[in-house]
Image 1: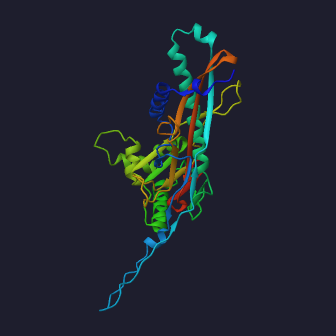
Image 2: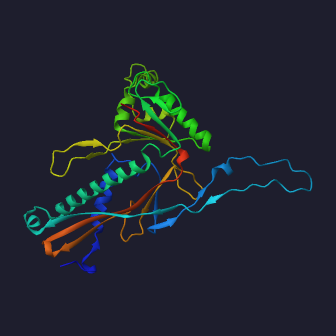
Image 3: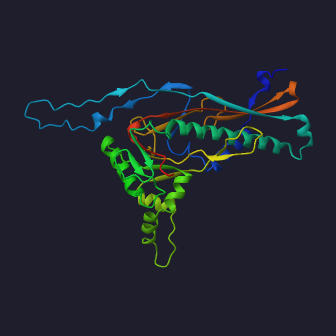
Length: 329
């Protein structure tokens, strides 16, 4: 027996549990790096402005009885987003529910299971859209025992490397090309591990500490050294083994780093490297475009808990990013 429309509904208490889970899932960065735009429609257009026009100086001396010099700019109205609906379900059979000590626990457990897997998918899609070589105008590779040049940097796990200068060069490159200085650095867990032990960074932190205090390299110290407002560490892991096989966990972020400009507040004429468009106009959807449904599957003698998540991650301005590929060994 298939459920009728009256049997299917968005379960607000379960959606609230999902939202709470997301807020506590600090290992994920997909919803932290770039502005999240709530959209009422599944697809639509957005505008991009050609910054080349805004970075010119067309002003001239005005002679008496003459017109002032003119300025213009160009708008591209063709970019678009489409937020496909990603879905996953978990069935709670009647026998298991009857044996459970608490009915709510089964629904909560199903909600957390589905939300966790949904955000692993969201994180993996974020990596494919933003955290890979060949996507950004600035793109360098980390190479073992290689001198710094225009396309390669010595890997940061090498004591002879110079991560502070490398990041400074990346910031200068983006600033010169766009007029906007990168304010955000995203790094994989392996990159973080290398940076906190790097002798140059430890020395700079050590000599900036209060006399007698231990040198502690934390995010705030790295923000100060790299002169960025935000540092996000990709700590989320994924079990890459086949279902039923011995778990094999790996960091989703890998050994990479992204330096970019992310608008603190989104706006029509506000440049940013990327946007996430979350379809909150989908009936009952929360801020990340997710909703939890619960309905009866009588043919299975089960209740079905289902999560849907509708979003699109868009790389808006490739010249506002500088990517370090395999920056640690």
